[in-house]
Length: 71
Image (tube, rainbow, N blue to C red; front, side, top):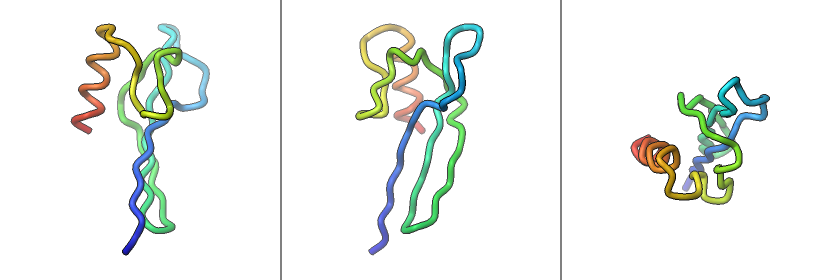
C-alpha cells in the first residue's frame, strides 16, 4: 500500500502589501511529490501549521478555512 500525504503550508516569501502570505499545498504519493498554489492567502499570525488551518473565529479565518475544507 502506498503512502498518501497532503500538507498545506505558508510560502516563505515576504508578505504582500496587505500583509498576507500565499497558502501552498503539497501532495506526496509514495516517493513522488507535487506542489501547487491554493490560490488563497492569509495573515501569517493566524496560521496554525499543525492543523493546516487558521486560528480564531474572525471573518478571514472562517472564510479561508471553509475554502480550504472544499479544496
